[in-house]
Image 1 (cartoon, rainbow over the protein chains, first blue to last red):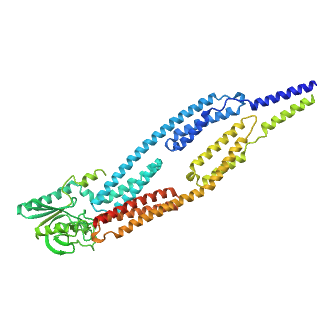
Image 2 (image 1 turned 90 degrees about the horizontal axis):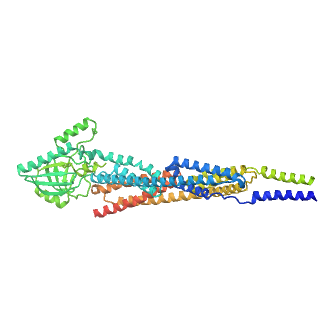
Length: 368
Length: 195
């Protein structure tokens, strides 16, 4: 009986122990643990490993340490668990996480501003280059490069809109390649229009032509390629101004046959053609002596094939200014009518690139 | 007394069973890891990045739970096993879904490229109708070069599709399509100006 009683006590004791071990409530895991896990996910989503890899690594290490301490604590008997230090540790993790998140958001805001500024810069450069290519009729390599640049810029915009800033920055780095290539393609033409010595030379020709008009009391013609205008002088005073059209390479100085360039120099009208292919025409004496010397030099230096001639038949003709000439100067029919009636064979014709040092090209290429 | 000793032995034996017999779910751990690796091999990082992160987090949680149990006197890996089973099932499901996502991205890229090709061809056709020869407008000439630039972009987009970079190909093709529409509009304006 006594033994049964003792057995009962022992059994009850173990039963109570088991109940205590498995049934008693201890302090719950601090809520900061779950919040930190959510925070870590948020940091990952915000691109912490990209924007602040070092800080994110440290944050994750702190989180890991906290979790390891939690594991140790959870491994203890429920009676002995104490989450106070764990809670403090996780609070510190949350604080550093919040700071990191704020830093990343600020960094992303700065990046977005920088990308937007770069987009604006490159769009401006592309627009400038497109304007210049239109001005000088350069519609080949440079335009193709500019189109590639514009497409790349669109991709950058799309990536930035999606918040993919590193990818956007990577693509932005490729843009200078295209804009530089486009600039390089047109700079030989453009640089002449920003070269002060060259412009001074052109100005001298024009002044001489105006002086001749004044001294001899005759008409003389001056053509400014950059302004796309033809000015008729009478007795040294501007008498009429007409708009003109040039060819594909109109902004180049003519060097040889088939280069589609418009010659620059001091010429005169050799013949009036009442019925030309392009309405009426005024033939000029291209090539003059200077053109021949230039041609000979270029050939000697191997810049021109021996099979290519110097060319000729450069005219001021009708047909409209919208067309692309092969090196001639095109005018509207009503304008050539008037000019044709006013000038004679022998009238001086001076063709220059520009006469103003601060012309549209020189001022625009300063920004390139 | 004998019965007392017997009872104590039974209780002790039960304790030994409870503390020693529960083993780490090694097989489940390996299976879950392998399932996540399979997702990554299928292109999970590209097509299911968020889900892969979630799976890895769950796996870490399971490992932590195992560590907790490892340190306990009475080990119980049921919860860890449950998480690991869930990870494996989710990973297997995700792996099965990725080819469809990839296929969709591919189809989207192809559709974007087709649309871009049509837009560029339309622009080219319009350029063909533009004034030719000596009367060709300088801006038409420039737009011809623009279209050449667009065609180069289409080739690039095709290359991206061939190398399975479908998302980038879609972006490139969409950009080319938008620009082609702009060029077409400019061609219309140039033709109208000529008339």
